[in-house]
Structure formats: structure tokens, C-alpha cells
Length: 88
Image 1 (cartoon, rainbow, N blue to C red):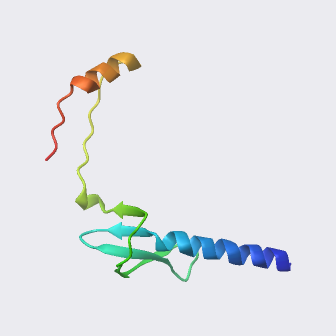
Image 2 (image 1 turned 60 degrees about the vertical axis):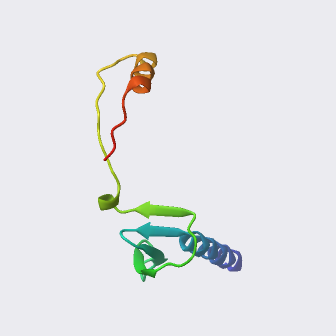
């Protein structure tokens, strides 16, 4: 029982360490922190620390989808090399 409790404490400390290094950006940087429910995260005030991982809000990045009707992987790679990239 005590071993299980110690392992759970170590896992919780590691989880909190990793969560302190993950941020959410939507116009400004937010910290992710565990809420009352351990399966959910709450977004708190602006973070001043450097983050290892930054999750970007959907409104703040460019996304496009292009379908290429090419069945051969080698031909697809050649087509992608000559494709002009147009970003906004």
C-alpha cells in the first residue's frame, strides 16, 4: 500500500512538472494546470516561464488541405518538390 502511494506521488509530481512546461497560446500565453478533476485542465493567468511545448489556438495558425490524385509515393514526392507554397 505504501509503495503504491509513493509511486502515485512521484507520478503526480512528474505530471505537474510536465504541465508547467506546456502552454496554450491564443493571443497571449496561458498556463495549463490540473483542475479539481484530474482528467481535466484549467487555463490560468498569463505564463512568464519558457515553455517546452506550446499549443496554438486554431484561430492563430494557417491551415490548408490539398488533395493529390497520385497513387505512387515517389511521384507524389516529386510533385511536392515542384509545388509552389503559398501562405497568407
